[in-house]
Image 1 (cartoon, rainbow, N blue to C red):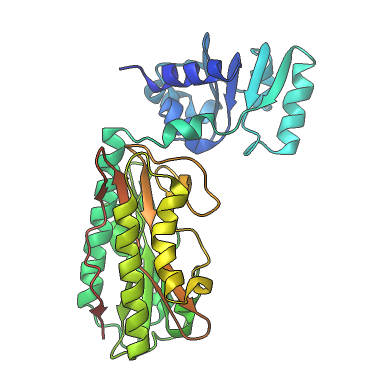
Image 2 (image 1 turned 90 degrees about the vertical axis):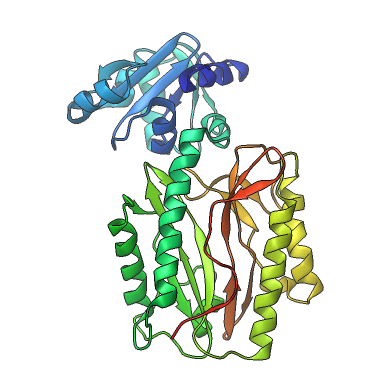
Length: 353
């Protein structure tokens, strides 16, 4: 099996480029294996160069054996420029205008720069077995924390306090980091899709949306569940059941060859038919991997199809302004015949007190 650098070199050549300068740190980690915080690489059919400063030279020697390693000076882009010729791609989505100007000036006409974002990202979308195992491990940690939350007394505890406790517990169970700041949002705060936990006690007799994930070996997990903090109204239960049905419809639509837009529609059409279309304003899901948000996307504005090995979230939601919100989210991997759910915690409505 070809290495990542070899596959990337082929992809670079297919874009009519002699080399690609990689500056995005997630792309750099995928392409080289480097886990430090400062570096860049140049990859092409005839070139494998990795640049970093003196702090990471020994680390790079261990982690980046497939590349020629170069100690970078005060202006690493100038060091890179001395090695470039021909038509060279750069990650225009990530490289700042200032850095692009520095690279362009250092080249002084010796090479042509061409925007080339997305080459590494497209390769990253299909996960390898060891990547999936890391994501499964991260999902299992989140599952255990959800299990413990379901047994925990929450009366009198604030949203902010609970969110911090969840993040700490994931670390105690072996996570190296959180995937993103955990969301704990009750009552009217749950009606905000990206709510910020408040320094107020969780509201009783309503819904509490919890959205969290963690990182294992660099790879993220992502899972959302909605809990009942006591008896809730029939209207609230209807909303929960609607979102649960839409989520299952979205999962059923995930398979290789499925259009990303069509998967979104499978869940969205159910919600719209129940006259809550205006209350589901975000996409159905997004890719997850080295970054918590990456390709492919499941949304009405998305293009392309799903491929086996993609890892995506399926997370419909209904948000009633000033009242309640419900979101149910699983992380899944696309298989040859459908999808495999990595998130294991129950999706039945669980009550907490």
